[in-house]
Length: 266
Image 1 (cartoon, rainbow, N blue to C red):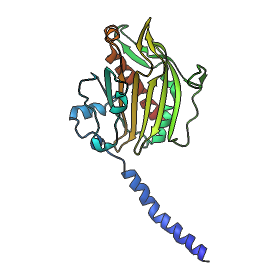
Image 2: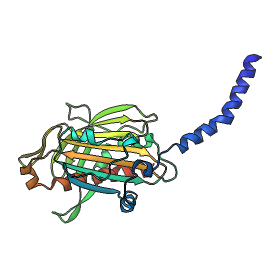
Image 3: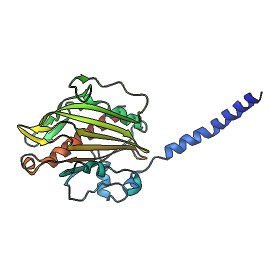
């Protein structure tokens, strides 16, 4: 009898307080202004535009999109470990569609590696919109070139995951990357690093581990934040042949559109 009474009381308390706790979790989403309080109105407007905003700088130039020190978001230190000569930063807030996006939604969007294939960017040298990646696939492991299919959408968000991918770049041919995903208190990070040299014609453009791009994704009150920073360590000789800032920015732009499309079709 006492056990039945306890169960009834416990069920009643759950009925009363569980909806309130769920509502509290929903209200706990941080706001864009909290994370980026120093941005001007034009920068905020661009971040909420249909493509977000991207900016490239040399390593000694000031960055504009750094989040608040108490935000817990720090991509700069990780990117700078490769001592890049060029940096790119981007901000993008994807508005919610039928429902709020979750971190699991973001994880599943990032899992669709094959969807990077064929995404267009505008080539000034060709004066046309062309596919940046002619092929895009997961690899069995770091040492294998065997392609494996994208998995079905996950039902649970892992705390961390590492996988290897190959992107056949229109300019640089086959490029091999390691991706490292990890969950943070408010969002998740997705780090991309080249595991082999990236070449152009007969020249090495970027040596192994000399390109790093980090995407930070967090559900905010206003939409899904995608904040990113990328760095590349290219020699002056290579920089004279290739517009490195433009190359980084275009690839960031394609990654942002990839995430946006995969989120908004869910």
